Amino acid sequence: MRMSIVLAGALLAFPAFAAGPFAKFSIGNWSGGAFTHNDSGQFSHCAVTANYKSGVSMHASVTSGFGWNLGFSNRAWGLKPGDDVPLELVFDRNDTVKINAKAVRPQLVVVSMPANSDIIRAFRGAEFLEAAMLGARYTFRLTSTAQMLPALVDCVKANANLKVAAGGNAPATTGNDGALQLEAVTLATNFLLRTQLPEPKVLSGSEAPAGVGANAVGWRADGATGIVRIMPAPNQKDIDVAAAVSASDARGCQGKFASGRTTDAAEGGGSVLRGFSSCENNGATRYSEYYVLPRKQGGFVMFSVVTTGDGSLHQRRRADFQRAALTSVQ
Image (tube, rainbow, N blue to C red; front, side, top):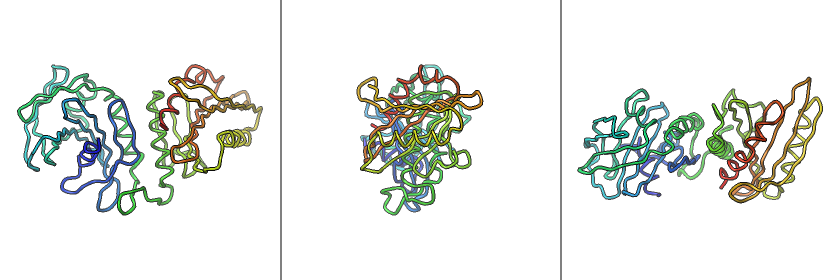
C-alpha cells in the first residue's frame, strides 16, 4: 500500500518529488489525500489510488491548477522515465481511446485527462475499464468514480493553502491553516461523502461561518448545514462537550429553546453520544443534532447537522448521520 501511495504522490512530480498524503480520505476502494512539493512544502495536488488483484494500481490526481491525470503502476515494470507508452483504454467494451502515456517512474505511467476530454467523461460514467499496455491487457472495475472525481476537486479547494513544515512530517500552522483545521476539513469531507447529502460543500474563506475558529470547519448541503469541530483537550468528557454545545446553542437562541442528549447504538456497532436542540423564534424553528465521538489522537470530534423546520430530515437520516460520523473518525 505504501508503494502505491508514494507513486500516487509522484503523478505530477517528475522530475521533482512530492510529500504526502495529508488530509487523507477514502471513497470506495480509492484512498489518498493532498500532496506538497518536497522542496517548498507548498500544496501541489490531490491524488487517490485503487489497488487491484492483477498487481496494477490505478491513480487519479488533480493539480493545484485543476489539471487531471490518470496513472497506472506495477512493481514488476522496469520502464525508462521519459519514454512514451502506447495505451489503449476501453470503457464498458464500447468507448475506445488510444493515447500515449508517459513513463514518469520505472513502475509508473501517466496520461493527462483534460476536464472536457473523452477520457474523463468515459471514466466518470463507466463500470469497467480495460487497459492494453506493455504487451498485456488489464481489466479494472471502476467503483465510486462518480463520487471520487468531485471529491478530488474538493480536496484541491480545501487544501490550496496547505504548507508543510520542513521534513514533510506535519502541516505548518500558519494563520488559520493549522493542523486542527486541516484535520477538520478531512473529517468534514469524509462525513459529507458518507451521508450523500445533495449538493455538499465544505466551506472556506469568506463562506465559513462567523466565529467557527481554527479548529473547526463549516459545511452546507441542500437542506442542511453543519460544523465539524476538533476538541483536543485530553481531560474532557463527552458529556462536557455536549453540555458546552448545548449552552452555546442556548445563548444563540432569542426565542423558545429546548435541548437534551442521549447515547445511541450505531448501526454496525459502536455508540454515539447524540445531543439535540431546537430554537423557535418568530414562527421559525431551527433544529440541531450533534454527535460527539472520541478522537484517535485524544479529545473528541463533534459533527453537527442543522436544519429548519420540524427535524424530519434528522428522523429519516439519523442512522446515516451517526454511521457517517462514526466511520469518519475510525
